[in-house]
Length: 475
Image (cartoon, rainbow, N blue to C red; front, side):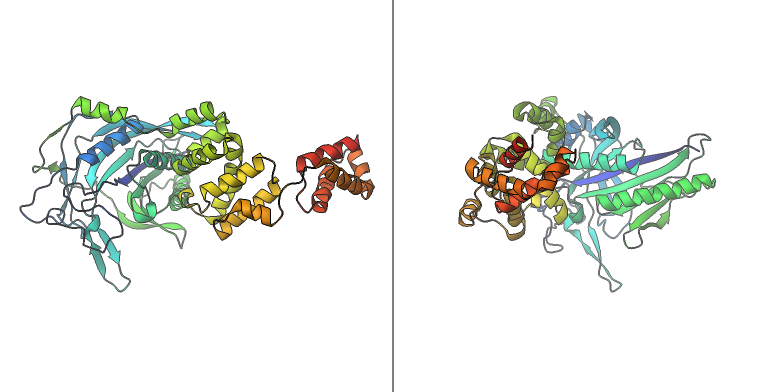
């Protein structure tokens, strides 16, 4: 059997406008519940919505970034359903005329570029938030009701959880570059639903689509997709079609759990939003937004390669995260050595960020202190081992005066030939077996001799000069 996994995604992105979509209430996360509300976003009779122009601009920016066609004429619709967090009994959205259509996102996976199509991007208002207090009660916070968001709907072009995660990462970072949302899943400003099924390519037999909701992290999304992929493959093997259903991911049990079955499509009874007139965008308005677009990852990568003369690989990693790319440029402006900065960022710094399990935007490493450290390395005033120890301290203990610490602790690198020669001669004299091992082709012996020299110099000797002096005497 040959199995093909089919995955489509629906992503909701809250826009970080100052006010809500259809009223002047503040759009701010973390406020006291039910304080950012008014008669309009609470759906009181007689109130009229007034559309947020900035939300329209942000949606167009997203459409441009994801290669979409932008509609100049559109209308808002009412999506009707009854749920406690939907205070009006309907949601204002775009069903018939989405603002953006037919785009795509390119991902790089297994050293190949794959184009993943977007069906649409449409504007809508968010719902309130249900809070289950653990005592059998559900409380509703309507601060989020009416917050502007865009829903990005992909075509089912992804064929593995890895591709879907690459899609999500690319989308998230592009949105961050646009600066139209903070895309924080833990705060609900980025939410993702997954639609997945599997087909037997030899027989055409396929399972019914499973929708996975309530995914609060990319890690949870990947685990849920991997679990469902395996479950669907087993169903295909056993000729079980399954049921069209909605599931949620349970992080404790590490499996998906059925929420509800979907025997028929939802009947949302869409109708035109009569309180909002047809929207016409002037072509000049749309073109102006396109002309003022911020630099996107693909363009920044190209510039980094040309301007800083760094490798394609380094530029790719540095520009995948907006905060990392900004940090890199600020440090380079102080160190004037892009390759040195890139090497340290992509090795030691990112390793520590990963160990701390934090986003790069929350890095505790002060830019000025890091630049001082790298300038000391660049000027051969400290060696790499000393620099790595100081870097670890900057992460663990917080910011301090790096230059003062180097001077007070006597960490300045020793490059005096006479001093180093004396150490090398002594080490070689006491390690004749290592000399023989090296001459017999055992390269590790050189590393041992280097280690002995660094130990004798208390870690302050110049490693490059030690290496040169040892090799001169081993010939």
